[in-house]
Image (tube, rainbow, N blue to C red; front, side, top):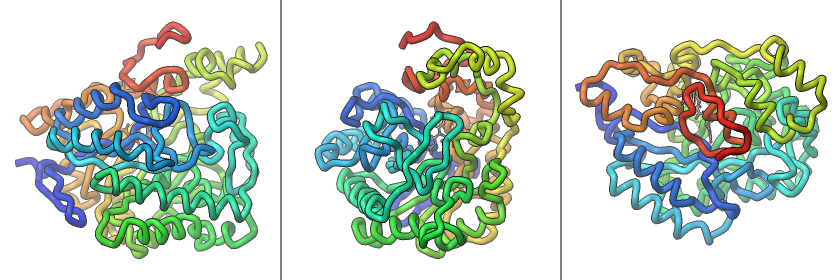
Length: 400
Ligand SMILES: Cc1cc2nc3c(=O)[nH]c(=O)nc-3n(C[C@H](O)[C@H](O)[C@H](O)COP(=O)(O)O)c2cc1C
Ligand code: SF4
């Protein structure tokens, strides 16, 4: 039997294999953040496709941290619908965790109804957002919002909760020196930059109890000039494990660093046609971006398992499960990653967007590599459409 299909346990949850659906924003929630029938159908397909653990798309803990058609868990009213979703996934043989998030400066006023907030007022060059620096009261409110949200996750029956500490969203904004320029106890030293996530963790533990699994997804490095360096990522992960997190998913990047989180193509034509903030730009800007975008913001080429080395470095230092995510496309490579002790779980995003049955195919003996071509249209169409595989196809503007 392939090592990918060994049964494992994390703090009492039994997982039937080592394959995980990495959190994937579906852009399928209704205006109040409730899951729609389309989410139910998508999760049914994923669970039937054989993945052991599904992590939901990022879910907002507070309305000032939301994005378009994002799931929400900011009120108790959300609980009954999530209970139904959890039951459906369980009936189809998979486990499910919810990823909770606040977008911080990686959202726009049109989504939040208010100026986006961040640790520091640092302009976001990808969304053209100047956030407002958070006050002490904001910080306290959002820490509490995460902890309350985690309590609702548990009450809804999810098997675990995952804090989104990656990709330049609020927790990651506190960790990264490029986005956190504070000179008070929330910024500066590594210990200070970690204070926000530490407080969230402590208060979450109080709300969900010691026996409930709390995971974190971490951008362990990024490509910003004054961003997070790999050594610091390892130090953060080590402290997180010591703190008590039950699993660390090792990712990378922030929104404006050239697409390191996904690698592969940045479809500038689609961004210019679909994203409102780019549509508003003048002719000259649009002409330059359409024709020379890839020279100005250099896309980072796709390579298989691009965070494996980072996961390996972290795995050497921690004694909690490590999830490797990013470019996991080849079953043999995934097995090697587990067998060599570099990670305990393999997280998949685009491979499951393009084919939710990928895990079952591997279990049945297939050695075929995922058919995803890293065109990244599934991500860049999310400003106007829902997630699916567009496989290199440009759609007519504003057609869902
Ligand atoms: C359409 C799309 C939506 C995503 N949404 C999320 C999300 O909600 N939360 C998150 O942590 N990562 C999100 N990601 C990043 C993935 O979880 C993953 O880290 C990244 O795509 C690399 O994995 P892959 O090579 O298997 O796709 C998203 C990626 C894509 C393509
Ligand atoms: S649209 Fe399909 S082929 Fe392109 S990156 Fe997304 S999953 Fe892969």
